[in-house]
Image (spheres, rainbow, N blue to C red):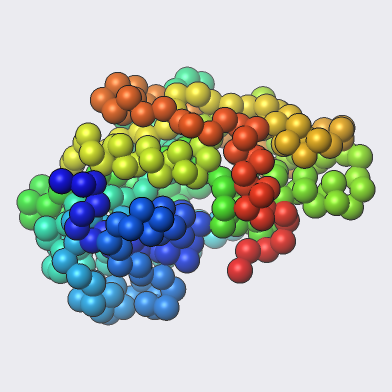
Length: 312
């Protein structure tokens, strides 16, 4: 059977990841039922019930709805991020059970659910310690989604997979302050500074900060590979190839052909100094490997329009 012969319900098709998943499905002619902002506020259970009732019977549900902020502002809204995301995820779990019990739920997770560690973290480290203080509320809601998938699956006989992703960048990425992840923010800032004639590239935090990073098409294909090989588990879906912020900044300068001096403002926001996942289970089972290198990914992101202007 072809991978996506049955319809896929994609939740969150106005967001960065959801929009890219939708584009990927449509480019291949796979049947898809998009659910975006027009459906209403997913913190309201009646809205989610209505959206699921209106959807066709599906082979999978790809849950990409989340309320997220980045940087220091997260410290100021821990309760709000927990409140809204927990309600979104619980509403999706219940509507899945009630209206789409034959569909496999693919939910997109974040490495923020793991504790800080100086070495790559395997899935066994899930719930082994507290997350970074800046993401406590958001991380707790993501943890609840993972455990909720497991408990709903066990009680009601449902299939699920919770994929914990790398930091992702590419077309449609947010570049607004407090919404963009580090790579999209770096690319946007560099493009704007170069256009303004600047000779310095301001990069927040330490150049030695370590993260997992994937261009969005690679991350989508990794999720597809994971879905084909795994079910009913929490799974790290990253390339086992962490990068430093300094390496990312250098790749951006090369892609732009911009001989700027990199500066790191003292006191700028710094999250966890090292966050990388051990995706050995996923890589061994699937043979998946990324196709887009760091500098090529930057070039593609720039060509797709990451220029520092807020996204529509």
